Image (cartoon, rainbow, N blue to C red):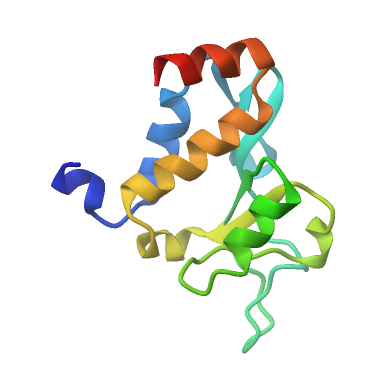
Length: 138
């Protein structure tokens, strides 16, 4: 692992890593927030400020929430219950296979950790054929 992989993750890394996965298309979501998809299925997207994700001190909506799909509820729970990660969820995402993270907290992850989250998100949404091909190559 290089020093670049050990450095704190940045928002630019989300874009670079998501685009590096095969068969990815990026779409402008609402407010031109990017949505990364594989086979027409979103796996990472930048969310608009919403009333379910707010600063507990001020009540202001978080302007920088990123959504990552996960394979299962067990994977989701493992990420959000680990106090060493910046991942969280809200009631809006109950039952949804995804976790949230604020862009302002991405630096709590290394670039390598972020890459794993994005790869797992892609794998959770890619077709069985694409998933098998990627796993065989890596």
